Every structure is written in structure tokens, then in C-alpha cells.
Image (cartoon, rainbow, N blue to C red; front, side, top):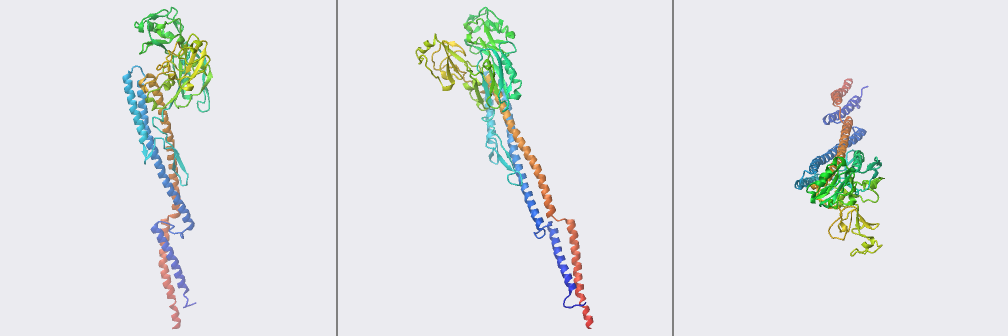
Length: 567
């Protein structure tokens, strides 16, 4: 019907126009902001989810930055260590250059000076390499954490070992006593990998070809890549003093090869003794020479023992107790840890229960200083005492006990020098003193196992003497080669660990980068507006706004028809 007080059609048109106006405002807001959700009222649950996703994506973005910082730190350290490795390569090359007797003392000193400078630069790199003020190679960069995840404690840890010369290259040297007896030895390296033992084949220790310390060293070195232990030997007999005029006996023999009577002069100036011995060196395996002090040196070229029968003459300087010499075995391990051995016949290689094994762990820095007695003996320097026995001969023990200045009485016990390193053995009229480092004895002696009358003296030593620094000796150059190789291995291990961490970080960054993209995509699906759909909605609402205005005008015009009824 016709109503005047209430224009229902107009009210409906107004209501629809208001609704359309709000929808049009919302559509314009979305189109102008690009967001589907501009307020919590737009989509309460959607907004909560989108906010959570946005927080996660932003956190992952910072985690990516953290990871890139970590990569920067590790790459800085890696490049610095690459330079250190080049330095170590040069040190090893120079040590190798010094490890041949074509070098003079002067040239070896020059090579050592170069090595000292190289070590200084190596330490300089270790002490100055830093990132944002944090030292990287000095040993303080340990268990460092990098947050690489959206949630707390999602970290990657990294450590960089110290690379100073005092911390790398620590190499273990162990050398047994000089062996003076032959037999069969079977050696076992215990816990070579922390768990297992390695048992070597039995080796005959004798003066025959294919036996001796050389054969044992060959057996050990055959599997050095498995056990980590390498061996070298020294089978060398040195006269106690310079050669004096004398002659050998007619039955003078070395390693079963008869040489016979040889008359030689002071210093063997006519070369008779040395020439006679060397004339059969290819058969005996023993080569003779003189050292800088004019002493006779007999050296086994292949590591078999040196057995002398007959008589070389007192003038040769070779003592009777040294007529049988099977040498010393030296073991080297590149991790600085003790070399644990067991087995049978160890006394034949100077490593039995009653033998003194010299041991030392030496770092790269220590190798450039003077090599003290203890280290020299462990490295296998040719020494007169070498952990063997020095026998002081009196007519009887009683004569020694009653000797002026002995300070002892029959049956008394005693200690000498620096504590535990000394002990005593009584052998049927001889007093035997056993030591590892005999400097502290303070009296003179000729050789391991030698017999002589000895009085207490203040200066002479039966120990291996201190040696000059680093590569200034042949044996020292060999040791520096070992130490440099260990240092290279140490740095390679540190770099390998860094490389593994870098790869781990890179893989993590790849993963969280993809995760971040997917999370942002999920947030966009919820929060961002679909312009195509919203443009269509806007067009619809815009048309409805126009049609709504027309509808309201028509609804108001309908009331005018009532006036016609009143006319």
C-alpha cells in the first residue's frame, strides 16, 4: 500500500547504500595498501597467522645474516691458515735442503736463520688474524656459537685451534738404548688408533744381510699410514778417540768377512785402515770414515748389525765392548702422543724392560732452539751413552768402595745426580751405572758399555751432548722435516674442520633461505590482496553505489504519487 510516514523502499535503499559504501571503502583500502588485511577486523585469525609467519620470516632473515657473518669469520681464518701452510711448506723444503751433507755449517746456519724468520711470520699471522676485534688463530676461538634458526638455541658451533708455532708440529720421538745382543724381536704397537693393537712380523736382529734394525724399520714403515708410527735406525760404532798408529790382528773380521792384518798410522793418514774396511763394504754392509775429531766411524748402510771379531788394535779407538753393535731404533709419531709398545725380544732392539728409552715431544717452535741432551737422545743423535751401561772397572768392588773420594763403604746404597734417572748394578767386580741422561754424573767415560777406571770429574759427560738449533745438523734437519710435516698435518686438520663447518653453515643457509621464501609466500597468501579479484569487487561496489543512489531517488519519488490521491 501507499505509506507516507515510513518509506520502506527508501530505507532499504539507504541501508544497501551504506553497506555498499563500507564495502567500497574496504576495497579502496585494500587496493591502495596492497593488503587484504588492514586491521584485525578484516580477518582476525588470518592476521594472527600472518603476524606469526612474518615474525618467523624476519627472524630467519637475521639468521641468514648471522650465518653469513660466520662464513666471513671462518673464511678469514681459512685464508690466513692457507698462508701459514705455504710458510710451513717452505720450512720443510729448507729442512730438506739442509738434510744432506753437501751443506756446510755456514749454509745450514743460513737456512736456520731463514726458518727462524718464517716461524716469526707464522706466529705473526696467528697472533694478528682477527674479525671484528676477535682473535681467530691464537687459541681463544673455541666453542663459538652462531644462531642460525628462527627459534632459540638453533645454533651451529665452531672452534679454531691455535696455530702458533708453539702449539703445532708437536712430534713424538722415542729412541731405545744401543743394542749389543742379537736375537728375534717381535714388536707390537698398542692402541695405535685408540683401540686396536698392531702386531708386526718377527724380525731377526743380527749382522746378516736383510736383518737388523734396518729390516725392523722397514717392517714398521711398511704400515706407517695405518699405525701413524715411522721408524729410522742408527747402527754406528765410533771410536773413543782419534786414530793412533797400530795394527789389526790377522783374524780381523767384520760381519763374517775377513780383512786380516792392517797396519795404520796416526789419524790413518795413509788411509790403510779405512780403505781396508771399505774394500769389502758391499759384502759387509759396513762403511768406514773419520769424523771431524779424527775418530774412526763404522756405519751400517742397510741397518744390519756390526760384528767385529779378532782385534782392531787399541789405536782404532774402538772398544772391545763395542765389537758387537746392533744399533738403536728410533720411532716417530706425528701426534705427540706416547708410543706404547710391547712384544717379545725387545731387549734385542734396546727397548726391553731393563733398557732406557729416551722420549720427547717437540713442537715447531722448540725445534728452532738448541736441542738439549734429553731431546737429542730421543731424536736418535749418535750419542756415547744412549741409555746404555757405563761400567767403571776397579780390581774389585771392595777396591772401589775403599777408593779415596768414593764416599762409599762396602754394601752401601747410593744415588747420584738428579734422582730417579740413576741406578746402580753390581756385576762381578764391576760397578755399572745406568742412566738416561748422564750429564748429572759429572765424570768421564768412553762409550756405552765401556770399561775404564773413572774418577769423579766436574765437566765431562757420558750423555748425548746438547745440539745446535734446528737444521744446523743433519739429524736436526731430519727432525725438523718430521716436525714441519706434523705442523702441516695439524693445520690441515684445523682447516678441514673449518671446511666442514663452512659446508654445514652453507647448507643451513640454503635451507633456511628456501624456508624463508616459503614462509613469506604463505604470509602473502593470507595478508596480501589479490588485485584482480579486488578490482572486480571495486567495480561492482562502484556500480552498486551509483545504482543505489538512483534507487534512493526513485524510492523518495514514489511518495509523490500519494499527492495525486488527494487532488
